[in-house]
Amino acid sequence: MTVFLLLATGLFVMALYGVFASRNVLRRILALNVLSTAVFLWLVTVARLAPELDPVPHAMVLTGIVVTVSTTAVAVALAVRLQAPDRGSKGS
Image (cartoon, rainbow, N blue to C red; front, top):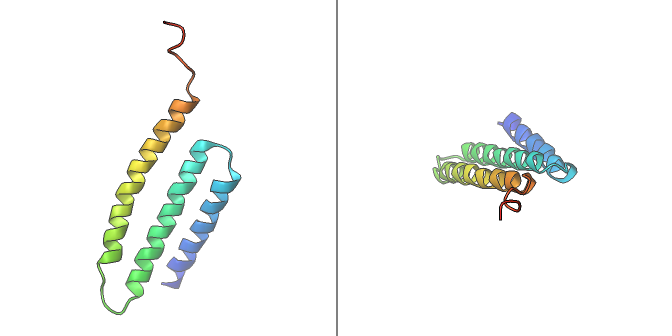
């Protein structure tokens, strides 16, 4: 289990670096996804280390996956919309 905690920590540190060091919006969104994956891995590993089985962390991770996917979709749509050229100004 220590391997998974170290892996989660490594992913977390790399994702934080990606969020703060990258200037590209899509790379930042990808780094935030890796960050959330590291948090999910940490939560499941810590829940597994508990003496008796607790389903709450697993339910939190499932809910977090749904929220992460929907947030990523909105963020990518906004990033594409902000970087696309303005097409509506010529026709009016």
